[in-house]
Image 1 (cartoon, rainbow, N blue to C red):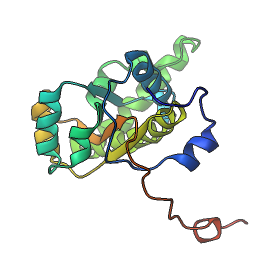
Image 2 (tube, rainbow, N blue to C red; image 1 turned 180 degrees about the horizontal axis):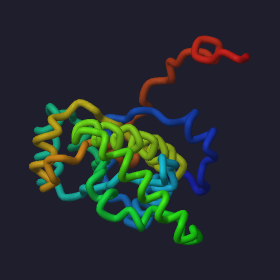
Image 3 (cartoon, rainbow, N blue to C red; image 1 turned 180 degrees about the vertical axis):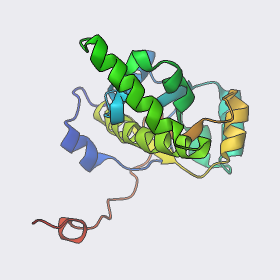
Image 4 (cartoon, rainbow, N blue to C red; image 1 turned 45 degrees about the vertical axis):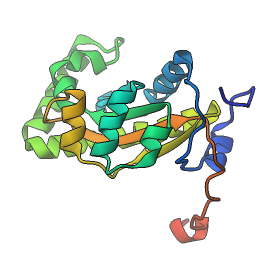
Length: 205
């Protein structure tokens, strides 16, 4: 369990987050994992599509297989939990009614469904997957801050064989694996931030 007793603010979570590769032993309570996923799911997306999906991996054997697929990155074996974030645009398109706000009129629902269908009909399968993956990266950012706010460290990973990850977890071939996230209580400090100053990354006009 993390040491802190109160949740951090968004600012505090962003300022204190580090990528951690060594985690303390001990399980993460499921209620905390569910809260982290719930908050990640509040991320915005075009048309409210919410293409992100999460697999919370705690099984040691599965983690060992994911570590192989992720080039042996040690944080996968060290962390009590690995969250696999992936994007499934096929699931979205098969259940468009679920993403339209319940207060929408029937005309609005029909218009939105038609707009979504037209947009994706003009795209290849790989373009659709890339679009969904870009949206899912927003949820990834929310997930990292949600975990940090509850006192859990994370290490997001993009270095993996997506085909192998999908094979390990039995995922459809056409989904896009956005990231693997090792999660748990930190057993190291992590490096201090080394980031560009605001003046380097922003222009005010």
